[in-house]
Each structure stands twice: as C-alpha cells, then as structure tokens.
Image (cartoon, rainbow, N blue to C red):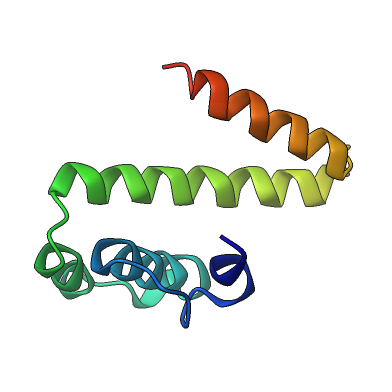
Length: 96
C-alpha cells in the first residue's frame, strides 16, 4: 500500500490496476485529451466495460468532491479519523 501511495508508477501492481490508474491519471490531469483509444489498454489488461465504467464513475465523483471540499473549505478528519474510517470500511465494506 505504501508503495502505491508513494508512486503507483513503480509500485508492484497487477496489470489491471496499473492500466486503470494510468487511464484515471490521464482522465484527471488531461480530460480533454481522453479518447476512445485510451480504453484499449484497459481492455487488453482484462478489464470489462463495466469495471472501466465503475472506475470512471469513482474518479469523476472523487474529482467533484475534492474540488467542492477545496472551494467550500470542508472540514477533514485528522489521521485518527481516517484510520477509524478505514477500520470501519474493512469490517463492513461499502454499503450499496
């Protein structure tokens, strides 16, 4: 996990995750440059269209919330709060 947070480009990742992170990086940093051809490496790595769509939704929502938080000065928890949230998610997962 630490290696991914430090630099996902050099972290030991499987092909699906590496392809997904590369695509999401481009989608976040250069959205006007994203083309249908950018999906080909994800499909080649074995991702389904549903998985690709899920990744795009998560990325888009994160980017929206991140910008809203910055613009509106939302309160963020300290490290202990994030740790508690992570433990809770590991116990129950995301509720859908």
